[in-house]
Length: 401
Ligand code: ASP
Image (cartoon, rainbow, N blue to C red; front, side):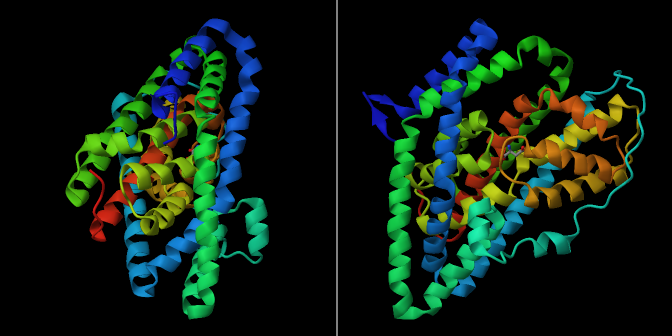
């Protein structure tokens, strides 16, 4: 990370974060005046995404080269993403059953939603292919962008000598985009200050009180998932300590926490993976963009907790079968969810309808969604980096100490 005046950037960001909390709590609503600074920071991060993802994914795919090893790395990555997501939901459901956040709210049972099926796999598949790659770029449709970049990278290799300048060009674009990421990160301390200050002023402690149990369950679940699951995977497959992992991922974790967007955090995740952990460009530029788009462990865990919260609040029992349905629906839905703030709340509608719970439950959670979004996005991103390090280690890469 870039350093300024001797204070490491991560400390500058941390100071911005703490000062932001203090300013939000003390100044109150008029702190809104700093909101544009936070917005500029997020916009700058977003500006990086399409060119960074496209160029680095083309280079990543082309540098894997051999289609067989591409298939192996891809298969491993997707398997790990889906498995960790499913486990995260189970943790959410267990905590929801155990902590019982909604019991005693005794809300009147509103019109129940008609049970709706999980997104059909065929629709998820059909949506992967861009009819017009430029439209996918303009719309920022990440899955389609990823698919096109994969096809493009593979074809550049198949084109042999003639394809080489194309790969070299995108390599140069990717390098330039990494430099630009470094420049944008210099704004991070101010952006983080503004974002957290505005959030704290909006959702003060008193607003949080009635929902403290939901927040508690989601935060405990996220911490458990990170400490047990990610530390375990990194230890078993990469032979590294949790300390190594979390200190390598910390800038991305914090950026995700305040921006509440996996996509916006992607440039930082890529820097962490490469510079702090020594994961090759080949792996990071393939695994991380895919993860920012399809891997959402924190969001899935939150779906589990919230579904039980809503069921308990409305006094509707959820059978084991219904809970299994939640695991399936939330895992599938996470593939199609954008890594942007609040996307998980929209996905919650789908999960609630899948098991016949009142959609009004979404409104219940909406008031505290920003606070929950911070934790879940941070876990979403941490999960991506964890899988990247596992894939890198199992592909025989030597990670940094
Ligand atoms: N904000 C999350 C993300 O970007 C998605 C969500 O709302 O759960 O990863």
